[in-house]
Length: 174
Image (cartoon, rainbow, N blue to C red; front, side, top):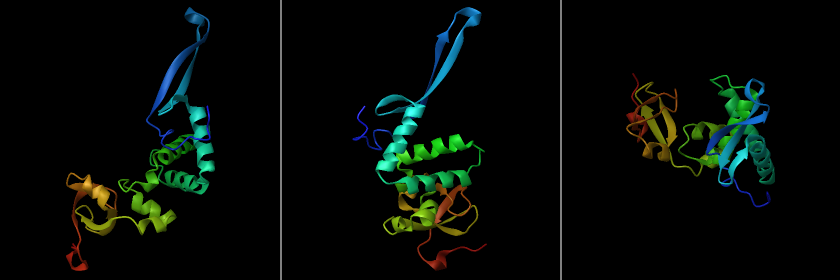
């Protein structure tokens, strides 16, 4: 496989795959194994191969620092107590999706404010006030566009009804 022309779109994580296989033997003496994989545009790749290809692509694109920032983000927000290997996989998946560039990501403002503030200069940011904690916070118009009347609160991260704050006088203080 020619890895020189691979793009993040080619390696975009679609879903994880798994397959049991027979190593040797029959009946009670059967020895089996299990292969974990990743489905992407290239097909079902072995998970270790996909990780290797993603790391090569990240290095070729000069995005090692961005990957380290994603890994740090997922490590600090590890609410399910994932293992370091699982966090690495999650950061690689997010990198393959270019999640840090998606204004529909609920952590887009927080992540980029911390690691890439220059990105926020070109984002469509909106000041909202959610009913959950009544504190105003920044979110993106893209996130509100996909809303069903609720959004992820920029302050407490609960999903809550919101209203757009057009000027500072509108901010409700309970």
